[in-house]
Each structure stands twice: as C-alpha cells, then as structure tokens.
Image (tube, rainbow, N blue to C red; front, side, top):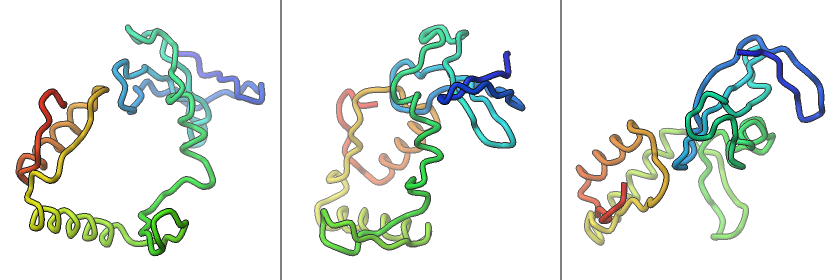
Length: 151
C-alpha cells in the first residue's frame, strides 16, 4: 500500500503506516477506507480501491472524518443542559454522572409510561453486528418496543 498522501493544502506527506478500515457511519455501503497515520495521528483518509462496493470512493460523511475528529469544538466529554431548551447553557459532567442521568431517565419513562414507551428508531444503514447485538439485547431486557422491519 502506498504510504504517501496529498493533503488538502497540496502537500505530499509520507505516512508512518496505512490502516485499512471501514466507515462506521450508518450507511449501506460501509465505505472501505485507507487511513494514513503519522506520529500516532491520522493525517489523511482515502477510499480503499479494493473495497468491492465503493471501489476507492468515499461518501461525504467519510470525507469529513479528519475535520470532525480533530475539530477544536468537538465535544469530547458529556455535557448536561442547565439552561432552557434552545439556550447554549451546558455544564461538563463526568461519564458516571452521564450514565446515572441516562439510567434515571430510562427508569422514569418505564415507571411512568411503561417499558414500551422506549423505542429504538433506525431504518437504514447496516449498524455493525456488535452494536446491533448489544442494543438489541439491552432493549429486549428493558422491554422496549420493537418496530416491525427495524434492524
């Protein structure tokens, strides 16, 4: 695999390694990707020409991975809204606080309206096997609604 990548500024950079992977977005094609790594950081992404469906092409979502991953305003930790809905008032909370908040909300919905008041709504894409299995098992144990034809 060639380890040279041309940046958006037109510079050619030699990567330390190239990792073959696939887009994790919720699309049917699951674009094959080549990720170019230098000093432990992704410096470029191209479509994998060996992928049987996308054959080296990337969708718009895959094209934004580097920008989204390294954007200075990327949210990297849980935030809790402290203002009114629509207002930009949030406070940083720990992961444990975020999980506790989510658990409390799910239990509240289950107690007030029943477990079937919770439903996972997805209707396209492939969602990789592990995520599908874990979400499905959790929702089944919780007693959530299941949409006919949902994944």
